[in-house]
Amino acid sequence: MQNQGSLKGITVLDLSRLLPGPYASMILADHGARVISVEDKRFLADGLFMTTVNRNKEHVSLNLKTEAGREIFFKLAQRSDVVMEGFRPGVVDRLGVGYEAVRRVRPDVIYCAITGFGQDGPFRDRAGHDVNYISQAGVLGLIGEADRPPSIPGVQIADMVGGSMNAVIGILLALHHRDQTGQGQYIDISMTDGSAALLPLAQFFRDLTGEPPRRGDMMLSHRYACYNTYETADGRHLSIGAVENRFWKNLCDYFGVPEFTPLQYDDNRRVEIIDFFRQRFKTRTLDQWTEALQPLDVCFGRIQSFEEVFADPLFIQRQMVVDLPDADGRPGKALGVPVKLSASPGAVRTPAVAFGASTRAVLAELGYSAADIHRLVAEGVI
Image (tube, rainbow, N blue to C red; front, side, top):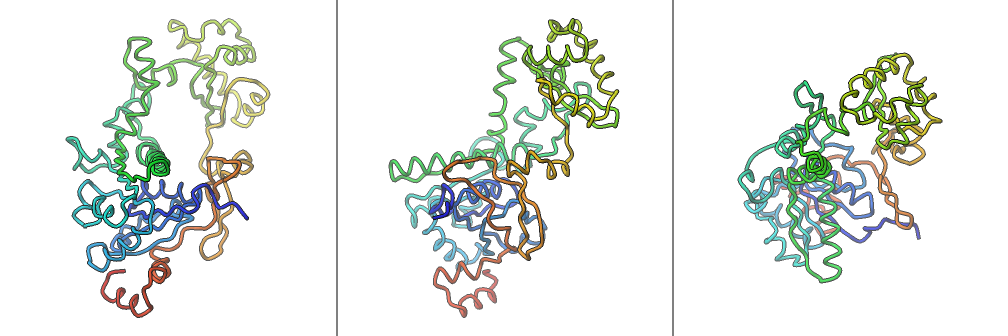
């Protein structure tokens, strides 16, 4: 029998929307869980139904503010191992679909809530987005150049790392606990908590040096030539990450400056050394430097564009870029599954279905007739 993924047999009912929850449930779906996403069609007007995080899923349109909608929800919840939501604290309880309500129909349910600031604390009711969470957590203050304002990263660190991935970890831990004890539980994921948890290296260097970390001026952030970014002759950039002295020595030897090898972390000479490498790297194009540095053991990387990533042989061979036709069969590309399991690998199986496209099939599975479904449509329930 063909492998169906490690989570085959697990059903996830996902009430979340936008990025943090859907990205988490996509990871679970990639590894075999059946994920049924539930959203109110009122959200269609937002234009934020992201197909890139809704592959391998079913999608149901459901108005939870109606009695009939809640009835459908609880029928689905009764069959689900995991329920996910991403509203502000208290919203699901006001809708009547919170943890305690779900536990009454599914006592061993794992209920995961992803919020900006957590279910308790002074900020629990505060609205926010990724930039606000990484700001509060001290992460944004460390990103950017030393003499300029903090730079907002182009990917959503709090949403996906602080929120999504911690949600997946929490759900997997809770599933393991349930296997051992038969007990379900509630998972409280704060994207701000998850962002603050990214600071252990900064804390280590603070404790080591006695100096607080400073934006653009830390050992692993532009302070030294060995861990820096450089412009090339064609206006592109590359990164050097020669932290260990043996890698730094190889780089210095290649450039004919072996005297810099023992000065790798010399604060009195660091500006001079950085300027030297800046001038030298500007003498060739990125492609030329790639060819020159490839044979050396120096820890370098091309700073690639978005389009280059999708054409990179590394990611194609590693199946991090895969072919995925859309729902109409038109060719397309998708990001692959980063966790490579030998016996039960995940897979990109199906593209994202249209908003609410699974509604009729899922309701039919619950026992609703065609006439019932027609009535629910007319009443604005689905």
